[in-house]
Structures are given as C-alpha cells and as structure tokens.
Length: 202
Image 1 (cartoon, rainbow, N blue to C red):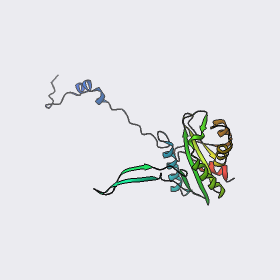
Image 2: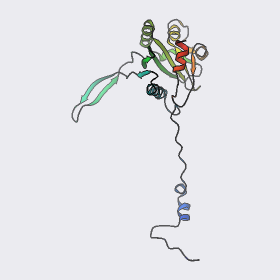
Image 3: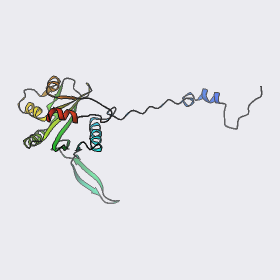
C-alpha cells in the first residue's frame, strides 16, 4: 500500500477528528419558532398587535414609557447622558377596534395562587375608571408565569376588587371564574381579539 503525502501543515482526516472531536461533527442548529416561546410577555403582545395591524383587524399600540431628560451632551451631536423614567400614569396599550376604543394593561406575576393588587398603581385604576365612564372597553391581560396561562380580566372587575375587596390579591380561582383564558399560539402569540369579542361585544 502506497503512502499518501499530505501538504505541509495538513494532517490526515482521522488525526484531525481524533484531536478535535468537537470540530469533526457539528451539532444541528434548530431555530425556535417565534410565537411567545422564549420571549417576554410584552414582546408577545406587541407581536400580536403587529399581526392584527398587518391583517387590518385593529389598531392597538403600546404607549411609550415617559422619560424625563435631565442632561444632554451636544459635543458630538445630541446624546442623552442623564435621564430617568417617570411614573407610568396610564396603561400599556390603547387603540381602536371596529369603532370601539380599547385600553388595557398587561401584567405578569410569578405567584401560582393569586394576582397581587400591589402590581397596579392607583393612577392606572383612576385612568381605567375614566375609560369606562366614557364607554370604552378596558381590561387587564394577566400572565401567571409559573402556570403558563394568560387571562383577560375586565377592568370593571379589577377596579371593584381594588376598591372594595378585602384581600390584597385576587385569587386565581376568581380570575378563572370572572375572566377569560387566552390560549398561546404561533402567530399571533396571544390571540385576544376573539376573547375581547366574547367578553364585551356579544
């Protein structure tokens, strides 16, 4: 059997594999489908709203978080060097759906048993009370992270519990009874429009 002569610096394949096993066989890379797998709650809702907009179903957008700019450096063009977030005075999302004004807040909790009312600042309650007074549609999307479930809960129920409830949190059993479960999907990640229809427009 004749001997094979390799160029300088090049070793036989078997030797390369033996010395560099990790490079000899690349592991397949699987792309995770978008949906809401591996992304946060807000991103999933934003993707849902983008999907609805693209399909012409509704126009709902996220309110920008208000920022108070303290100092700007103009040395190399305007650049914010000192700023802070102001307290959120209203809710996360608002828009229009088939002639109806929509306003809602998205919340997540790591509790398995209840949703803490401390997660809701009083100014959001007051804002939603104003929305309801003007005949708008207002609700909360509440995500229980450990349970991997999301509920649409009418703002009227949350406000009543907030103002008159004897507990500092809403039990998950009460949310199941008075709210509507939203199933996870691919696109949109959270298809809440059919649930909105059932809760408010039937």
